[in-house]
Structures are given as C-alpha cells and as structure tokens.
Length: 64
Image (tube, rainbow, N blue to C red):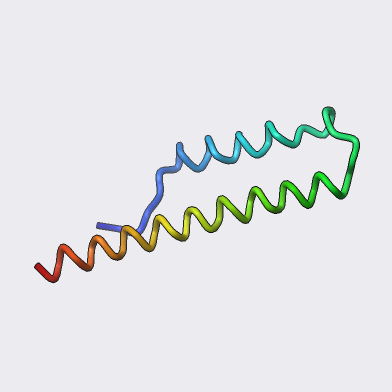
C-alpha cells in the first residue's frame, strides 16, 4: 500500500475552494485571500491526515 490520495478527489476539493472565492463575486481583496488560505490549509491538513491513516493501516497489516 502506498501513501497516496486520489487525484480526482484533490481536484474536486480544489474546485470547491475556487468556487467559494471567485474574484468576480468578492470585493474584499485581502480578506478573501486570507479565507482562501484557510481553506487550502484545511485541505493540506486533511491530505496529511489521510496519508497518516494509510500509513497506520499499512503498519497494522504488516504486524499481523
């Protein structure tokens, strides 16, 4: 088992972030950039968590 994530899933999540922060819909400038940064940080943490879960599962499989 490899520590991987689904590329289609990542693309879907990035599309969600992009849709939330369409420059034509927002006029707050830097405030929107801050919120987009928060969304991207959340995605990053989620991906790292999922990779850790995969690693833990792999470790359990090899020890049994």
